[in-house]
Amino acid sequence: MKPVHALIVLALLFPGVAQAQGWSPQKNVEIVVPVAPGGTNDKIARAIERTFVGGKVVNTSVSIVYKPGGGSQIAYAYMGQHAGDPHYLLMGTSTLITSQAMGQSTVTYADFSPIASTFNDYVVLTVNTASPLKTGKDLIARMKANPQSMPLGFSSVVGNHHHIIAGLFMKGIGASPRDLKIVVFKGSSEAVIALLGGHIEVVSTGAGNAAPHMQGGKLRILGVSSGQRLPGAMADVPTWKEQGLDLVYGSWRSIVGPKGLTPAHVTFWENALRKVVESADWKAELERNYWGDFFMTGADFRKTIDRESKEMKAVLVDLGLAKQ
Image (cartoon, rainbow, N blue to C red; front, side):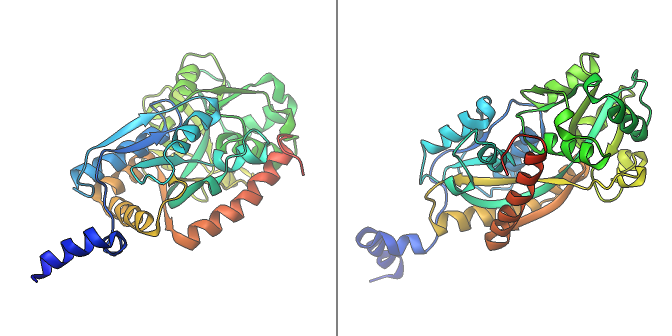
């Protein structure tokens, strides 16, 4: 019997043997985005889709599906309908940790198949250029004096990384995180539009979302949560540490699959995402959006989830959103 024929027979008689040879997508792959188009999650999904298709990493079609609303619960429920199906990938955020800690959801990372973290998204606090606030120190003084006078906007749910940054900011200046007055938008683009229109005075968002408007002279970035200044157009924006505030925080973004994926499924997507982060397009995307490389898979990724779950809960307790 010829080797090829032997493999066909084995695949028919013993499917497990064929599976051991590896798995690859057999139909359209959906990348599910839990928020409205236009923000960081949308940018990530589009960058991944470009390399999956353009780089022939995936030999089937790939589509991006938006499931905003319900604090990401709509997207989570959608993924839950496809348990065990590796053709569905979700843009995972800190909401998978924070929603459960706040008692808003019973869904956690344990209800998915973690695949990889992709990068760190550094957060900025930004104002309209018409604002009287010129520096981060101006914002610190304003928030110390009367935090209720300055509503802070962000997307897309209470308790996410944008909210956590604001809580860390308040704690760092010696004020109560519970004194924050917040406005929650469906997506980062909506928050920025409101800021540009003068409908809100300060917004917490990803550096890449604010930088183009800063370059256009419409927004002023008061501080960034990175450990050191970011490159390019952000090089003149001081970190919070430079302004006397010990605030360094990067929110990693992840890719997860539905619960019940096999090791072969996870291995395929780990390798596929490794090709994405090694691509020139992805590296350009990191630079363009001021994202920090943070690719991690396997046990290391799971340890990071466990550690940050504890750290995030501590901040949520300070915000009055979770119990000790």
